[in-house]
Image (cartoon, rainbow, N blue to C red; front, top):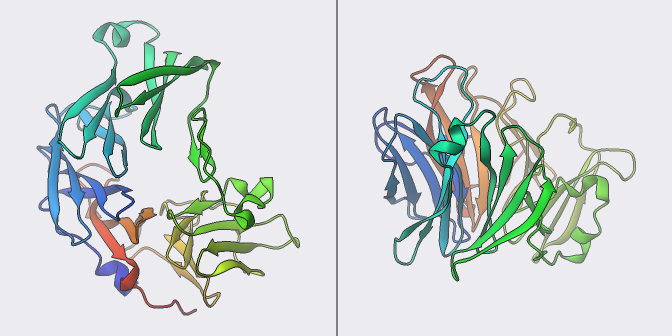
Length: 332
């Protein structure tokens, strides 16, 4: 708890939320100071660099953000500031080349698309995976049919990879839907029963998962090249309401990392696979839940609750960065 409280990064005035972690451990975050909305890159040395400022902050917000060694992908959602009861909708998808700083359009909805009833060419389910951008264009708003697309920013190649009934594009430890580039899983991870496969999370090196299909009791599985497979059985926790997949940070497996009210008064449950210790993290302030967002490259990215926000039932956040060396072994 003390390490989390000390992990906040000074990104300047406003509310800042972590969104993604690069393979090198950098954090991409978004900041809103009430006037401007900025995309930030937080280095492993906790330095902060502005990448992009939205030209229309009163009507647009950053949606999905993904990062790898070469590319940063962002979905820009249309959501007027202080709007009540309005759902965000992707208006455009852009990619930033980290080597040159060049920003390119991947796809965009036209004014005509938004004006039709029902709306057409609805962009959805944006994902960066294996150096390529994937997304869906639905025929109509809330429709079940459309097309899945792939854009390779390195070559400029655009491909429609599926069409017809489409729900979403998902990435996991075994690859991305429609990508045709499944990742090779270590044998103990590949052997996880199908019912538990959706719980698998990875930080790019180690893997963790919930074990519910064996021995009739809840447990945790963990594998890393250093430790091999570790099984922790008989955990006195109910995983039924926890969000999946788990987060893996160094030797820790983290359940319910979203910090939502899926479990009352629980921000996250952390299991130390070295000792089997289980630590339940609650809100540091009543009703304000920290969010553990992503883990990769020795960094755990968090959005730390920082008091009430400007709107009703809104919370301000500060981006938090924990490095592997910042944590000591957990104790119950």
